[in-house]
Amino acid sequence: MTLSLHNLSSRNLLLLETISGSRAYGLDTATSDTDIRGVYLLPQEDLYGLTYTDQLSNESNDIVYYELKRFLELLGKNNPNMLELLAMPQDCILYQHPLFRHLTPGLFLSRLCQNTFAGYALTQVKKAKGLNKKIVNPVEPERKSVLDFCYVPQGQGAVPVQEFLKAKGLKQEDCGLAKIPHMPELYGLYFAEDVKFKGIVQSEVANDISLSSIPKGLPPMAVMSFNKNGYSTYCREYKEYWEWVEKRNDARYQNTLSHGKNYDAKNLMHTFRLLDMAEEIARTGQIVVRRPNREFLLKIRSGAFEYADLVAMAEERIGKMDSLYAASDLPDEPDLERINQTLVQIRQEFYHEFN
Image (cartoon, rainbow, N blue to C red; front, side):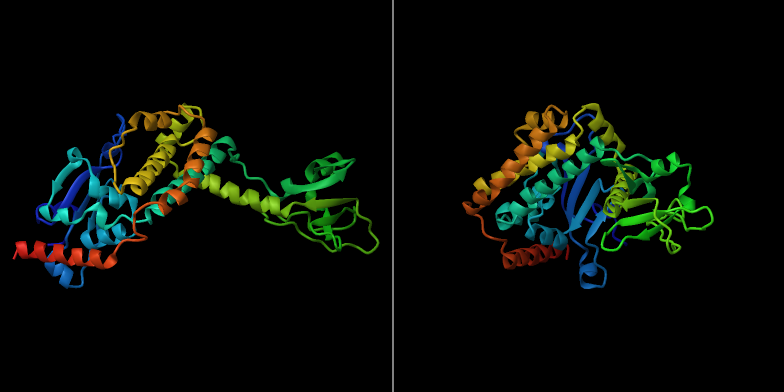
């Protein structure tokens, strides 16, 4: 029988099945999904054969089960999501095999948690900054062109080249450009009734200006600059913004707008949860999944704080992690030999039980 998400229980392959995520943290709301995580062992014939299935999940990844070897590999790297499964609240555990008792936090916790918990929290802060930038500085749907980054000096300032040409009754298609030696991104702008030039750009979707052959002795009517770096930056930000719009979670985005603080409140709530857990692991060597400061974290989620204040608080705490972990009793990294022995022991006992 092919191993699948739906026949793990019926084939007695489970080591652990538990409710995870916000419900385990005690941070669920009326609209929270129910996430399920679990650990299983391959059937013995699959382990010995060519078939190895390291993970099973549904399409939305609300339900995910990890094969024991993969689970221990991630624990050996101090993956936060895997470490949490070792200390789930009792009311979240749907099934736990007696052999799961061999997997204790003390076997895995190490100073790597500084990077996996606090380091991940830092990436969440950066992500929050990026989201804040996108919300505060939306990019217009109509894409700007090269011409929008071209300017002509006028008085003590400069005007867009399109405005300059309009004032003279000219079209960009009738003009020509030539480089000015020793002056990067500066060009002579030319026009003559009896000369056919290539235009400033050859089409509306061009990504660069166009150069023309200029008749000898024809003076430029102006000097034009092309802010090529500015145009490249704009193109990158335009692409990133509209890809984000296409892929964003609209429910979370609308929640972000509704509290008026212009940040992903759920993202920053979990940033502070991770920082709390990183500090607890360093000080106590314990994993606390059910958060004791539920009210504070839910206030973050509701938008009760200013974005800049939360980022400053998070960055201050991240800055103290080095000294906190340096003073901890945690090993530098998990003992992979012990983890391997534990994996072998659990497999031997589990398969012996069914033979």
